[in-house]
Image 1 (spheres, rainbow, N blue to C red):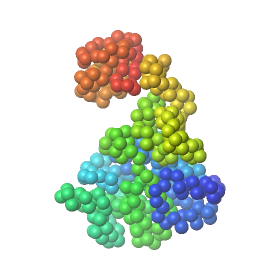
Image 2: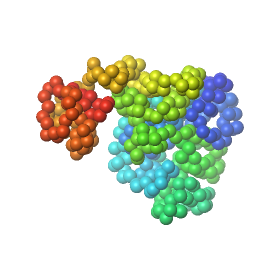
Image 3: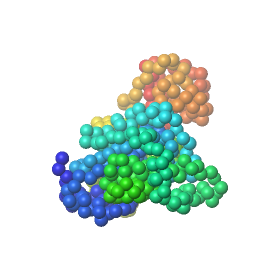
Image 4: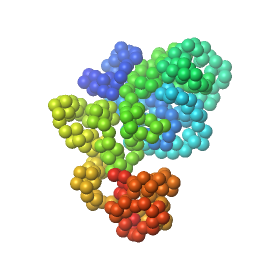
Length: 393
């Protein structure tokens, strides 16, 4: 595939969803030269589902891919066991090999919602990290000082607070950095929390007589509870979410997140986004613009038809206080309410379902339910909270 050197496209590549570029001059020169770059992103499978926060660097990879560059998606099946503490205020526990394998079940399929997998090189870093000897790790570690590692903001705060920092955590950047050596990356993309790890890649590439990679950092976005979106906190919008649920979750975001989400988690036309921003500043209705955001995200991860249906569902359910025309249906293994709530995915367990009932969060045929032993009948409509509806069959 021929590399596209269109200056307008390159300018947007280097600006949209970008916080900082390290090695910018070298990167611009390479992009303008028509050279095919090897562009890397690594993600540790610390949870089973990718979320919109993870989509930001993946969309940047897609931008590079659309210009004809080679994408290398590194699945951190080895580093996922070690645990990256870059954005943590406490020690991240190690995962077992089995836990990582479980989380990996549909990772590539999820990545395929954003990247063209046929034009993507997918690697697992256990391929090379399992082979490293202690002598080689010692050689890599010699490129850094202890002060380099403990000067990082989150590590410094933990040490000052008297919290434990494991030696394992301080070695993590070596592993991520060596990934860049192994795949000979020209560019690495990642969140601002990954800056130190990506800089370690530049140092290790110099150690192995490679040209240091350029680095593009992307902003981190807030999740459903106002904190940084993180699987650890459960405040995420998963890219695997159902269309109605994704639409509803986006509509629950704070209004000030509308424009950042448009810019960073979609590839909606930037001129139109600027128009939306002007409308909001002038006192426009944020709900209408947020509905466009929700529709665009559902369209991207599902389809235009699914987006239209999710919007119709939302309007009828929340604005017009009507039941949606098309309700999901469930034929449960048993008709007691706890089983139905669990098998419908409205609760993670029967204990979780019981708590929802006790907190007045469940309705059957629009009437509040307080009895967890209630037995349902085919045709009953079950509602949990404001967004979850299901018809028993």
